[in-house]
Figure 1 (cartoon, rainbow over the protein chains, first blue to last red):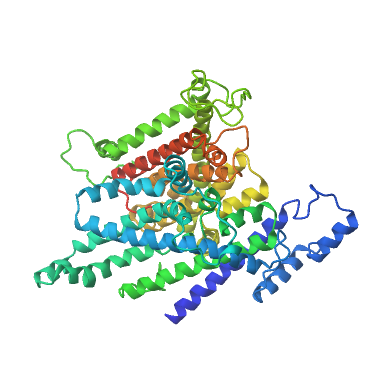
Figure 2 (cartoon, chains in turn green, orange):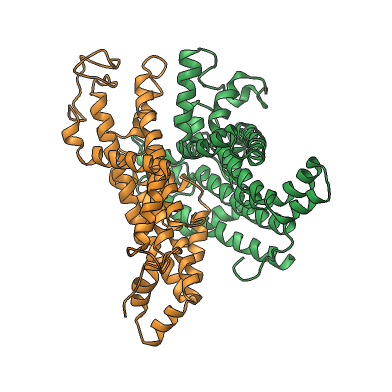
Amino acid sequence: MARYIIGRLISLLFVVWMVSVITFVLVHSVPGGPFDEQKQPLPPAAKANILRKYGLDQPIYVQYLKYIWAVLHFDFGIPYQVPTETVASLIRKTWTVTFQVGMMTIALSFGAGIIVGTMAAYRRGSWLDTILTFGATAGITLPNFVVALWLILIFSNSLKLLPSGGWSEPNNWVIKPIFSKDWIMPVLAYALAPFAIVARYTRASMVEALNSDYIRTARAKGLRDRTILRRHVLKNAAIPMVTALGPVIPDLLTGSIFIEATFRIPGLGKYFVTSTYNRDYPMVMALILIIAVLWGLTYLITDLLYTWLDPRVRLGAKGA
Amino acid sequence: MTESVAVGPAISSIAKQPRTLWRDVARRFARNRLALLGLIIVVLLLFVAIFAPFLAPYPYDKADFSKVLRFPFTDVTHPLGTDEVGRDFLSRLIYGIRTSITVGLAVQVIAFGIGLPLGMLAGYRGGMVDFAVMRLVEVMTAFPGLLFAIFLITLYGGGLEKVILVLGITSWIGPCRLSRGQVLTLREQPYVEAARCIGASEIGILVKHMLPNALSPLLVALSFGIPAAIFGEAALSFLGIGVNDPLPSLGKMVGVSGSYVRVYWHVALFPTLLIALTMLGFSFFGDGLRDALDVRDTR
């Protein structure tokens, strides 16, 4: 087991390293840079000075090695857009926003999804089940910015109940009050797709568990429904759910660019777009590296959880 | 030797007329009402996309600054109103569908063009080739969702061709993994071994013997890949980094509408409805195809 984990971590390191090389080369291979003088022409000496200050006058492999050396010391550099901050502090600030939206979305989608999926599995053929089986496709396939605009059209335009977005900068609040109306529409629009996925997977794995022999045995023994559900059904149904749903979480935590754009939320996703646009190399590099690490770790944890839930699975064997 | 592709699971020896895999699939597909609905939507969209110049009452880029942001159903000459520079909204929507369909199909051509040979080769050869391809796939997966596409687009600029190229480059992993897995399971089949014994070439085995047997899951993956690419284009254009003006794109229309939606609801409602219709149509079609072909888990 330990050997397996170490192997996986090494391959994760390799992936992250490759990602850093590819991103770095791509960013620097494109003509133009963060200090192009479309807006204000600079005298050549001043420009050379700026380039030297940020190390952009050196050969690319030197820049890369210096960058990696700094990153290994947790120094992600200084964002070109906001020279008064560091990349780490800017990411921390914007991530608090994205993280809060993501956590609320996870809570809503997983909570409601598991409940609805379980109920649909128990009452197969009921109206709830019918709505779920037909509605899930819609929930999964509709882009969240489409859902977001529909919510705005209904709740802001027609009913005039909810604000259509435009959050203040996170300087004014560290944790946004949970009962703020600002949450409702972004979280609803964001949660619909993961909710549909969770509900569908829960239903499928619950149905499979409910139809299995060990449940029949448990019933025959005269166990109470509640005990069967808790001790036998949920635990077995959790196995396929973990593999299917684990990867949803980093996606939600890194934020939806589209939700943040639609509701004008000052989060991580919005920064990713503006950073790539402005050729803010340190910011882009840091964001991509963070996301790559987060994804790799989630996949690893998902696989480990899988072995823990289902002892029959052996990791490290062929094909795992 | 006649290569019989038609080895459906339900072939019985007492069938009156010859049953082929495809006839079985068509029959099962036709029994599924939601799949038929999807098929009708897909055919309609294809029709609109192909005949857009004949269906649209105006050219998509004809601006009329005396009629800016007209509401729908108020002006006979512009039944669905006009946009922020006075272009006929119905025409823009029709050409927007054309953009979506173009991207959806072209991206899949690239994705399968890269992923299919790479995956099949990796699965068949194994060893170093497999190792290299799988590491490449792993690195590509580390860029989740559309982030890599957004990143590339902001570096190299937008426009229809670049959107297609970038989405194609970022979506070959699915077909690659799938075809590799298919080849891995088919590699040990007796007929492959037999073909190898009589000295069939590697390409011959892959194309003539393995590909037809791996067709069902690949087709299903293709039918799901198209709406995924359509979504990708809509999403990039929504952010303002996709298709360039004046070419219409449903995603771009949604993105632009954000500034006007509080008063001019139609600029948001119609394109979002069309995106929803497109996505749902293709998904129902894909679901139906998967059930009809009896393919389990292709993603």
